[in-house]
Image 1 (cartoon, rainbow, N blue to C red):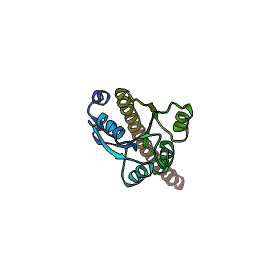
Image 2: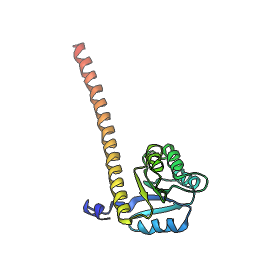
Image 3: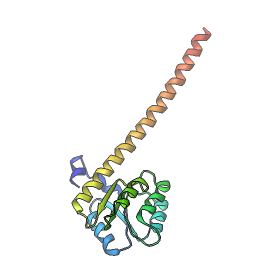
Image 4: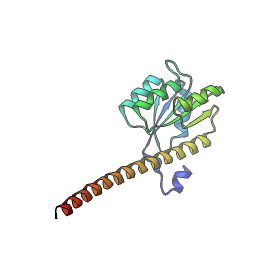
Length: 167
């Protein structure tokens, strides 16, 4: 959590993370890795993950590739409609280059990790991705406010121009 603490506090306190893995020991490992500062929820299948995403707000999803019912890429792909701003991370024991390409292109994965995972690299990447995501959301909010203010100023200017044209 060094990156967040250096930024002036532990901003991960309200980060909700969905961990998707059909192997309980892998899910438990990820939960231990993110035990400090993250609110973690586990789903064992892609369908369960999508149901959890529909039911509540999550900031991050970390999913395995191989799972029963649907792959992690299929789950990420379907999650785009449910939670478009979700930070997406794929983990897999498979070294297939096509999986990595599909995870990024189809599933819009922000990061891809090969098992065994270096927990320090994973935490650092998730911290960075969450920080970046929050910055983007903040900028979008500010941009929307500026656009509303611009529209209001344009409306007022038009009123002034009309009132001066009458005189």
